[in-house]
Image 1 (tube, rainbow, N blue to C red):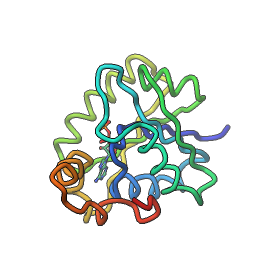
Image 2 (spheres, helix red, strand yellow):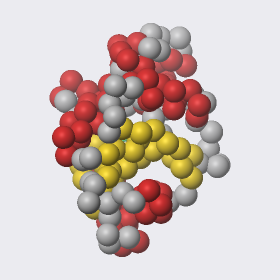
Image 3 (spheres, rainbow, N blue to C red):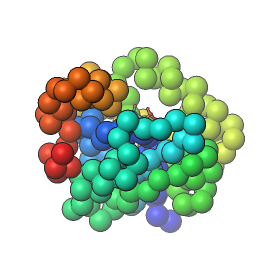
Image 4 (tube, protein in one colour):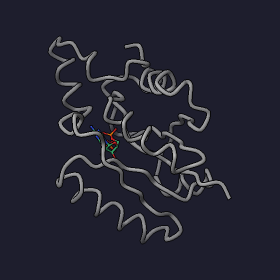
Length: 152
Ligand code: ADP
């Protein structure tokens, strides 16, 4: 059976931290679906199509990787895609506390789906999409924080 992981997030925008997590996960899975969660009540900073385009370009050379958008519960999306794993990245202990709650709730809803956590490379520990958005909002250059392949 193929090992399929869903890497859910907002990716608003994709950063080198996200890229690092996905590249580290590649040897572990047969397929990785990078899934942009759409929230009806909350519009992103960058348009969905733009976020998707950057992700597609970042991983263009990787046949194992697909990029999709979804609404609703992540575990329901995993079931629909036949994925057995949710992939999440950990930067700090605050990430861990947050992720533990979500991971445990997801496990209650769908015991067949396992959450797998990976660390990013240490140089990206301080990097988050929200900080990148803040820099962009105030006219700063965000190029160094984004994957080179995204071509932003
Ligand atoms: P969300 O809104 O669900 O937190 P994000 O797009 O911000 O979505 O993040 C998606 C995933 O990537 C999360 O698991 C997050 O912890 C992880 N992540 C984001 N930035 C980094 C980083 N610099 N290093 C490691 N993991 C990261």
